[in-house]
Image (cartoon, rainbow, N blue to C red; front, side):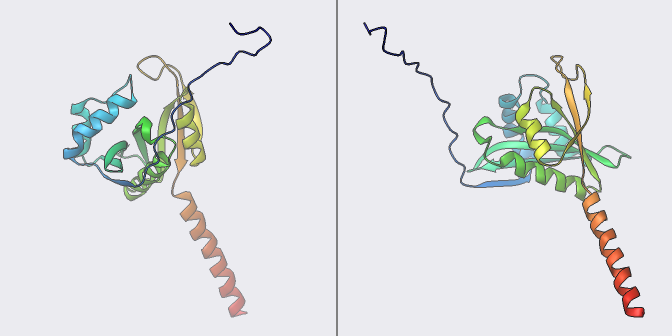
Length: 193
């Protein structure tokens, strides 16, 4: 037995750091990626999962864009962007990153590509909902410039609340264009005087 004066050591298991990813590519998902999307969905969500049929439909309609993140040759995440009819906004309908790829910039890059898809689809803003207890996702969205719009009680299947967020995507280019036009007018006035 150990003398009472000797401090007791507590052994705790430190979480294993994820293996650093060597290469990450993001591309539009195809029907041939359906099995991978279903697997990501099952690994990332315990409730509110999209089923195989829904994922298949989203891959074939023009009102959605599904992007797949592939790290070191393995699918590790996806973003599903919806383009609601007659709306100036796109919606990030689903966003999932496999545990082994988290914390390595995959989510940030995938979110940027989702924003590009929204802009390419003619939408000036991207809206989303995030579980109020998903601190990592909330921090990712905040760091990317999303602002909280409101809280929605009992939004998810298990009764968890959501935080609705949005980011204006087109404002920067509009403000930049407006600023350039103002400078051009000023230069023209100076030249004409």
